[in-house]
Image 1 (tube, rainbow, N blue to C red):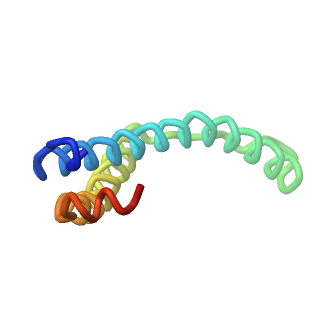
Image 2: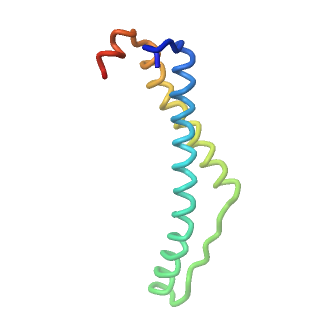
Length: 97
């Protein structure tokens, strides 16, 4: 992007946004797959151990908290990559291709 005229701030913003969206989508996929899997494991282990299924109790506050934490962590992790990408010269960016 820098080779075709993008400013370093634009590159930083794009990389951080992409990392944040990837973190958000990954977290949503984890919740969508994790909840049914937790129900199945609770059913299985409860029946094996106690003869009755273990109920799943979700904490909405905990779920939102972990979702926010994962989004913030994804944004922070992509900040390092964004900073490095924005510091590259045009010559360096063209040599990667």
